[in-house]
Structure formats: C-alpha cells, structure tokens
Length: 316
Image 1 (cartoon, rainbow, N blue to C red):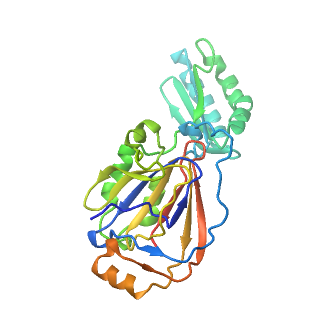
Image 2 (image 1 turned 90 degrees about the horizontal axis):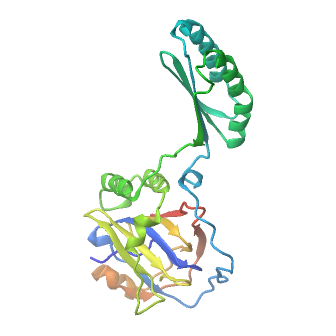
Image 3 (image 1 turned 135 degrees about the vertical axis):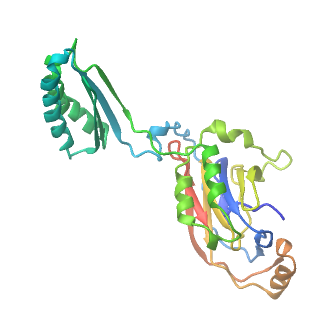
C-alpha cells in the first residue's frame, strides 16, 4: 500500500513549508481520489513578500504557553527561639497572599521549620510586578526582623513552563492512542489537542528534511515513524507547490506545520463519472476519471507563528 499524501485537497504554499502529519489508514483506504475537472478559478495567488521571517520564540513565549509568570521567594528565621513568632507572622502573611485574586492564578506556600517559601503565579508580568512592589514587599518587610542577613533569602521570577511534547513524547502518545483503521475509532479532538502541545524544535525534525533534487517543484514525504496503525511523515513543500485535489476516505489525518506557511482549500465531493467509480471499485489507488464542477467550501491558512505551529485536521 502506498503512503498517504498531505491531508488537504489543495495546498498552495507561498513559502518553503515543512509539515509533520500523523496519519492512520488501512490498506483498503490508502487510496487518493485523483479527479480531473474543467479549469476552475482558485482565487488569487499568495506571495511570500519581501519581509523577513519573524524570529522564532522560546517555548515559554510560544503558543503552547499560557503566558503566566511565576514568582518565588523564601524568607528565613535565624534564631530558633523566634520560631513561634516567625510562624505567626508567616501565617498572617500567607493568609493575605492566599486571598489575592486579581491577576493571580495560583498560590503555594511551602512551610519549613525555620523558613517559608512563597510560589505565586500571575496572569502577566505586569501583575507580577504589581505584587512585588505591593503585597510582596509588605510580606518581606514583616519578616525582615527574623532574617539572618536580609530578606528574602532567595528570589526568582520566570515564565511558567507549559505542558508540552517533545517529538519522542508525542510519538509515544500517538502510538498509544491511534489504533484502528478508520477515524470512527479515533478520539480526533483529543489527539488534535495533544498535537497542539508539541513545541517543534528544529533539531528534532530537520534531520528528516529531504527535497526532490530531480524535481524541485515537487513536495516530498519523509518517513519519521510507522506501524500498522499510522504513518508519521515530514512533508516538505517548495515555494508555490500544490497537491492534486484528493481525499483520504475514512482515514484520519492530523497536520502540524513546523515552518513556513500553507493554505488548504476544501471542496465538496463533486459528481463522479462512471469510469472513475468503476476503476475505484477495482483499484482505488489508480482510479482516474472526470467530475462535475467543483464547489469550494473554504480554506484554512496555517502559519508558523512565533515558534509554535498552526495545525489542521482532516477527517472528511
């Protein structure tokens, strides 16, 4: 059986494009319906323009991230004899921080024998800064008399690391969750959600890049992983490349764009001639025929936005 192609009826790519697709299919459903029709207008061509590509953002600033900021600070008690007084002040201070609501998403207070650590998560950096100059400063001032030198003993602010997949962890998830021969057996939304959590580092996927030297206008399909339930392939599309109009029968196809941009145009299934229907029943992989006018349903633009991929899923 042949490899499934990119799960989009028509893809016009203004820039060089690489997309990782997770596909599942049975041998009987691996065919693509190659349709020929009278010339139709597909709209204006897109151009890449002369602007430079945006700089790739780090994981905490990608679309995987919520944008939350975490502030951690610890205050110590130098004299064990002051433990009861220290804990009383800590208890009062903790209550005030636990009661914060505006701009705060989470509060944790870690209480040790002679120290306390506050971990506060904020919606944004602006909310964090307001806390540091307001309630946080008041807490440090209240605990300052107990400090061996100065309070806080430790302080750090940073972004909240989001729950994200590496390519190996994503492949492990897909192996466990893509089973069966049709999309009716797949939890399509759940799998799409996990794919959206992949932060595609170039060092993970660039080793699979391979273009067709003999035909620089052709797209390529480069195998990343395969088993009896699915293929994971890296597809490389030269600028301006497009596929023929096709579908994937009852197979599932998820697409994650890791670099560049691509456009998927979807069409309603047209009226098919008898020649195609007969050939499809005998050999779906090589069926050729004619069809009626194409009805354009819409298009999806996928772009590499700030280090996290756009994505699409096709199960029609």
